[in-house]
Length: 180
Ligand SMILES: [Zn+2]
Image (cartoon, rainbow, N blue to C red; front, side, top):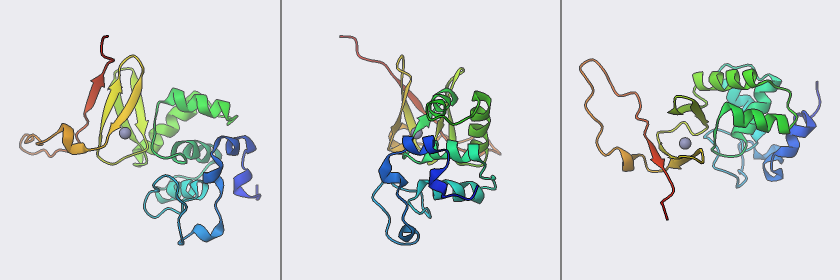
């Protein structure tokens, strides 16, 4: 299929805000459009970025990975569950199964494109922001929000047992609405 990449699965394109779909050739290496803060080294074009992002981590940019990658990374940082992404894909008429969405999310996580945030035994979120940060989880509303300042939650890192090092600290601060 050698057509313009932006016409891929026409219905996918329709779900992306138009400002992020416009990827003029001049953006590469040049001035970057003022969209969400792009990852370093990216062109500001979600489609092209997703493709190179996948190639950089050794994943073949298949249609399904591209479509899901675009939904994940084309709109700035987000937290999704497999179910949320599956629902979006279905609405955008991207032909994928829930199992494929699930597998793709795990593949992306394995190569470091996503970070997994386990909120409880049954709910796993995938975070497109892989930098060190913590989360608020709004109980009952199933909403995961970033706590921007990593130092707010953990002021001092505990000393790990002999022979170990701290790989990462994940804090989920659970919120509930105040009783009136
Ligand atoms: Zn996050």
